[in-house]
Amino acid sequence: MKTSIASDPADLRILDLAAEQVRQLGASRLTIVSVAREAGMSHGNVYRYFPSKEALFDAISDQWLKPIEAGWRMIADAPDPAFDKLERIVVSAHRSYRDKLETDPHLFDLYCRSVEEGRSTARKHRNRLQSDVQRVLEEGMAGNLFDVADQRRALALVFDTLYRFMSPISIRLDREVPRAQMDGRCERCVRLTLRILSSGRI
Image 1: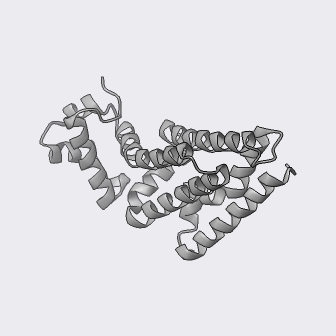
Image 2: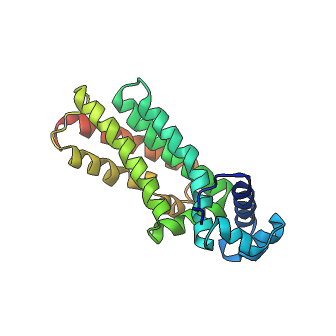
Image 3: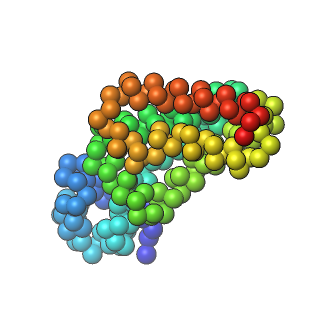
C-alpha cells in the first residue's frame, strides 16, 4: 500500500482534485467517493494511493507546506548574518501562513486541525522550523553574534516570544487584525528577541 505522499501522476491527480474540493467546500464535505468520481476511478482505487481520508488530508497539507519549508532552508543556507536569517525565517513563516489563511482559508483550517490533533504532518513541519531556527542560532553563537550560553534556552526564547507569529492557530485567531498591523508587531518582536539574544542575559 502506498503512503500518503504523492509520488506518481495518479497520486498527484487525486491529490490535486481533493485539494480543490477542500478549497471550494471545506474538509468536512469532502468524500473519497466524490474525489474518485472527479478522478474517473472507483473509490477503491483511491484507497490504493491514500489508505484513508485522513491520509489524503495529510498529503494535501504536506503539499502546500513543502515550499514554505524549502524557503526556510534557503534562508538558513544563505551566507547572511545569523541575526538577519533569524528575522527572515520568522517573517517568512508569519507571512506564508497569513497568505494561506487569506487565499485558501479551508486549506488553512485543514492544517490547523492537523496541528490541534497532533498529526504527524504538523509535528514534522514544526520540527523542520525548529531545526532551521536552531541552525541559525548555532551559527550566531559560533560567530559571537548571539551571546548565549545555553542553546536550549535560546531556542525556547525564540519560540516563546515569537509564538504568536509562527503558530498557525494563533495566526487564525488574529485573522481580524489588519495585516499591516500584525506585520509591524512581528517585526518589533523579532527585533526585541534579537536584542535579548545579543545581550548575554538569557
